[in-house]
Length: 356
DNA sequence: TCTGGGGTCCTCCGCCTG
DNA sequence: TCTGCAGGCGGAGGACCC
Image (tube, rainbow, N blue to C red; front, side, top):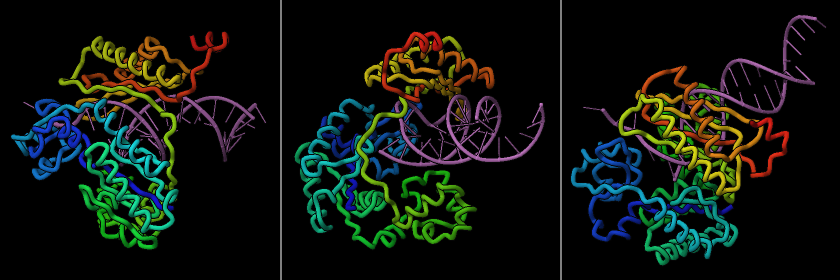
C-alpha cells in the first residue's frame, strides 16, 4: 500500500482570508463569541504565535491576543471550498477517503508503483489544490494511514514528507504519543503518568506493562500503531450512523418549557436531515450537559424506524423529563440525536399499529 | 464568570432467551 | 423445576476526532 494523507493548512481561517483579503497578516480566529461560551475552531498561523489553538475557549484566545479578529464559522462556504479541493484531488488520484472537510487519505498505490512516483503525485496534488482554490495543503506519504497522518503534520504549512517503506517505526518513535490517532487527553495523561512520552516508548511496552496502562483492545491497537502496524484500508464514505443536533445556551436553563421548545425545534431539523437522506431512525437519544460539565443521556429504541419531527420531538421531551427526574437542575446544553438508521420504507399496518 | 457541534467507536451493565 | 451459562440487544457513559 502507498497511502497519502492530505491536510489543508488552517483551513477555515485560510478560506476566510481568501474571502476577506483585508484579514491577511492579522491574527484570525474562526470560532464562537469571545464574550460567550464559544471555542476556537481554527486559528491562522499569526494567531497561533500567541498560543491560540483549536478547542481553546474564545475568551482565553481573546485574553492571549486582544487584537485578534474573531469570525463565526461559515460551514456552507467551507463545504463549497472543500468540494472544490476534493474534486481537484480526484483528477490526480481517483480513490480518496474524506475524513473531514479539510483532510483525507489518498490511495496513491492505485496510480504509483513506487515511492519516487508517489512523491511526484503528492506534489502534483498540492499544485492542483493550489491552482483550483489558492489553498495550501500538507501531504504525508507512507505505507499506512498512521504514518501518513503523522507525516502530513510534520512540515506544516505546505509541507511534503515521505516515509520510506521499512522506516515506519523509526519515523514515529520520536513523536509525542499525543500525536497518535486514538490518544486523547485521558490516554495521554495515563501514558505520561507511566513515563511513556513518545511513540517509541509506547511501541516498546511489554504486554504486562501495556495491560496496566491501557487495558483491552484499545491499548493493543495504540501500541500497534506506534509500531507503524496499521492495516486499515482506504474506505469510501458510507451512510451516516447517527444524526444529531445540540445547543449550548448562553446561560444555564432551568425552565422546562424552554427546554422542551428547544428540543422540539432540534427534532424538526433532525427529522429534515433524516428525510433528506431517505432514512428513518429507531433510536432517539436526548442529551443534557449540566453546569459541572457532566453529561446525562436517555434513549429509547422503537420497533420500527420513524422520520416524523413531531414524534421525535415528543419522545425527546419525555426522555428529557426522565433524565431531569433522575437529576434535577439547570442545564447548559440539550441535544437530540437519532441512530439505528434504516432506509425509509412504507410501514405495514401491523408495524404501524405497534409503533403507535 | 474556561471548555462548541456533530459525529464514531468502545466498554460495561442489566435483561431476556435458549 | 432449578441453576448456570452464553449470546444478543438496549441503555448509558466515556473517549476521541475534525
